[in-house]
Image (cartoon, rainbow, N blue to C red; front, side, top):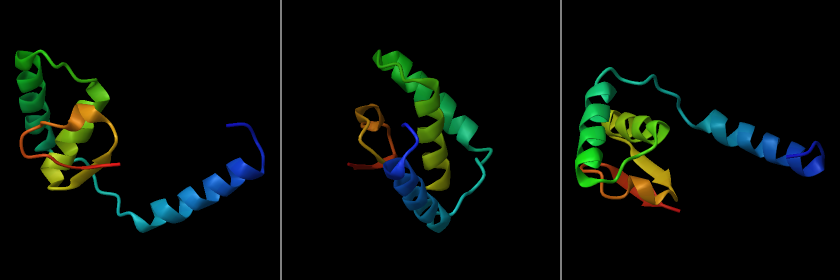
Length: 84
């Protein structure tokens, strides 16, 4: 986004939101979830982007609900997804 008032407003709003969200490290167990998701997707013919795999695996490892509008996350066993 080009420099300007709108960008500055969005940056300020995002700083406020991100300051409220706790940041946790990726648990070691996310690797096991990653492998399981990747294998299940490959076997079903629905390959996922590597970044999306890590996002899903981390959410599973943390027991977190993933908030996304990306339909790729739907159907992952045990993953709670809140669609936007």
